[in-house]
Length: 332
Ligand code: AMP
Ligand code: MG
Image (tube, helix red, strand yellow):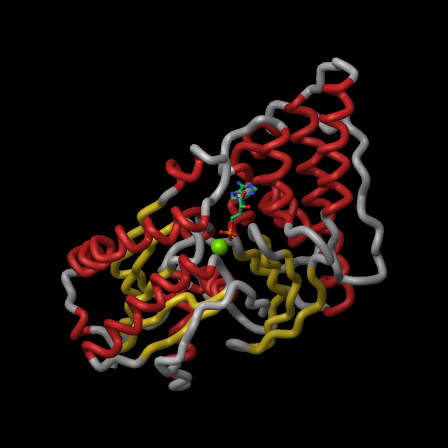
């Protein structure tokens, strides 16, 4: 029998719901973004985010059902992001999911947002195991081996800042608008790698480090301002991006060499970056490996990926009870 999962995502500044059939087919997807509001403040304001989720969630539910021409009664389960994310934002989605599960007597499935980003790769492609998974988001930078559904072995993670956070800070110091990542990428296209920025040197481990690079960019801009010197913003954006992504490619290359795994999936908001995609493709060509990166719609936060990640849990009947709660942390 076909499995229809109604999935809810509200971990940051997008209120999203989707109906996903058998973990793969997106029957409907609605994303209400708060981006324009948070852009006024230069970043996500948690209190505003949770209030806006509350305001949007009923409309998003109605729209999702209408688009699919389905009813909640038709659903097999209700899935929801429960970690990691902004606690106040997560709670709005979790309470909605609990209410629907209780009212319509449906199983409830709590999903890790980062695992959701990985399963976004299973929507239009087929994930095959074992594979390497590179998670690059606003709060996380992790390299994992995924041996099977929900079977992870962490190789390494960032010891300080996440790559997405670093993009956002660099954007701010370069006077680029929120959200920073896409704007740094755009500006970098106009520049060249002319600034000598520090590469983290930790070649013996799979861990990442971004705070040194971030501080170097911030200091360079501040020092130039103090001396009244003009900086070439496009060159600095390009130099930053190349060093930041090089840190990822070096660790993935090490993993290709040492594990002999021939598959790589990239997940999380930063996977929307075209330069990253190009560099990973070159690396995969060199090691004759398969590369999966979701299409743009599924790279950024969306509920379809939560429906995809909930499916293996549904099959295994790994349901949550009504004590399900939000957590701001939640590494894989
Ligand atoms: P997530 O935490 O998975 O929701 O992803 C959000 C993060 O991805 C933010 O830090 C964004 O700046 C970053 N991001 C989104 N698009 C891009 C891009 N094209 N290039 C670099 N970073 C990006
Ligand atoms: Mg995300």
